[in-house]
Structures are given as structure tokens and as C-alpha cells.
Amino acid sequence: MRLFDEYGRRIPLPWMRVYSQISRRYFQLNQPIIDFSDVYRRTVKYLGLGDLPFSDQHFKKKCEDLLQGLHEDGEISDIAKGVRVPFLCPPLPSDTKRGEELVKLAVAVERSFKDRFLEYEFYNRVEPQFLAGDNVVLAVDSRYERFEEARRQGVVVGWYFPNCLSEYDLASQRSQMATLPIFHGHFVLSGGVETATALIGCPDLLMNRDAYPHHLCLSALQDIDERFFYSFEAYGLNLVFNRRSNVLTPKVAQLSEQFAGGLTVFTSWE
Image (cartoon, rainbow, N blue to C red):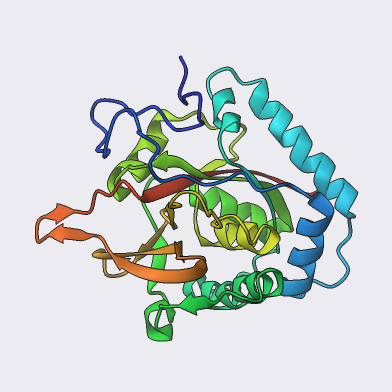
């Protein structure tokens, strides 16, 4: 059974709450040109990783092998027809707070974006107090704990598919994970770290001069106040890190054609 369409979008099941069963693709992302050496260089530079125990060519091979594994899996192979970005994530110290790491990652995203696009701006719309302490938790059913566990063992690399859950509401982005295969345990709903590192490596991901791009929801993360969620988005040709309301009316959650959740496939660098 095909789980993704010819554009790499997750095919909604009847119970999933989506803006449209078949997208009109009004909001779109362009596929960035993938230069593994540049992604590697930018990530090391802007995250201050120093000397890593593997090269940019090893990073490229790990990502290509992972992508080949996806192509060989009939159920999920069509996800690779969509936009995809390789990423490199640093290890996760055991005492790291998710929100506080997001603060640091947003700074690194800004530096990489401004280095590439001097004429445009990066805006951080998230007040630091919202990300303090334990204010950011994992969403139930996201599988993101698998990603965090891998990072506790060392560097993680992989692919971020930023808009394969386009037009899904947040609840459906999370609950649909139960219908996806495990893919060796390394197939999770996208969160903040790989979204940010993907943007560090490919700062032009949300740059589209011909169509409006999606808002990239960090759906594996949940604000302690469930009325809000986090996203990276374009404002004109500028880049924004935002904390958005998920409330349409007091008892109805947002459902937007512009919102997109992502899926992440990853592996350790060894």
C-alpha cells in the first residue's frame, strides 16, 4: 500500500483532519540544491562542533545509504519524491533542556541565514521565557524519544522531509505516526533540532520567489500550553522563528493550508 503520493505527501486516511485530501499545492517549497560539503561546513561552523570524527564525504555516504534504504521500502519509498534536506545533529548531553537548546539553535539558524542572505532578516518571535525549563515536552506518539536516545549516543545524521504532512492539523500529524512503519526504528515526526540543523545546512529551504512556502511546524514538540506550537516560516523573503496559536475557536484547533509537518529519517554516524 502506498503511503505517500507522487509529490511525497502523506496520503491522508479518512479519519485524519486535513485541509484537503488532495492538495492543490498552493503553498510549496523548492528543493534546495544539496551540497553535502557545504551542509557539513555550515553545520560545523555555526554549531561550533570543532573537529568531528568523520568527514563530509562520510556524512554524504551515510545520507545516501539511508536514502537508498528508503527507495527500497515499497510502503514509504514515495516520500523521497518530495522535498528533502540532509542534516547533521550534535550529540545530546543528558542535562539538556529542549527549549533551551532551541534558543541556541535559533541563533545558529540566524547566523547561517544571514551569512547566505545579507539583504534579508531573521526574526525570532519567541520570548525566552516560553522556552525556559521544562516548558517544551515531547508530543505523545511522535516517536521523537527514539531520535533523542540516538543523539545521547553521539552524532546523528539523516534526512528531513519538511512538508510531507502539509495541510494536516497538529493532532493528525502526531496520530498518523501509528500508521507508519518503524523503518529500523529511525522514522519519527520532525521536531526542533533536525528542522533547525536542516535550515543551518540549507538556509534557502524557505526561499521561494514564485510561490508562498509552508510554515514548518515543529510537531514532535509540544508547548506546556497546548494552545501554542513552534514553527519556522518565511515572512516575505525573511526567515522567522515563531510561537503560533493552535486555536481557531475556543474548542476547535487550527487547520491551515499553509501549515506543514515533517518526517525525519536518521541514523548514527558510525
